[in-house]
Image 1 (spheres, rainbow, N blue to C red):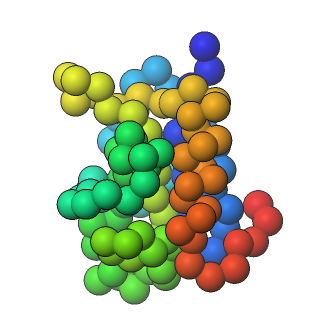
Image 2 (image 1 turned 90 degrees about the horizontal axis):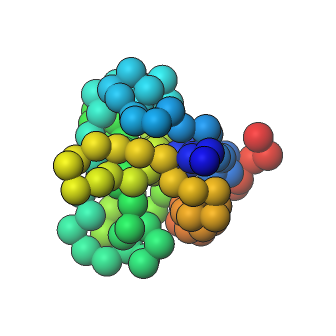
Length: 117
């Protein structure tokens, strides 16, 4: 079964990227760059996004990366990647239907104009 992560870059629509069976640091760095950090969901964003793990560049703001998404609890800068995390803490892709729903949700919170890919 194909699985996908969702990658959202500033000023672009979220895209589905085929995921390897288990995500590793190198895969995350290819899509996010910098030091990898989990977005701290301290509050409710949306049911769709609360069900996934969102990775971002830990030093994105310090590096001057552009705004990407403005959630009710914080604005995230630079590229982000959304995936599933299992009970053991391993990160995995999403089924196509779930990934498409996550992409729509991320685009809903996008900052600025969305450019075609």
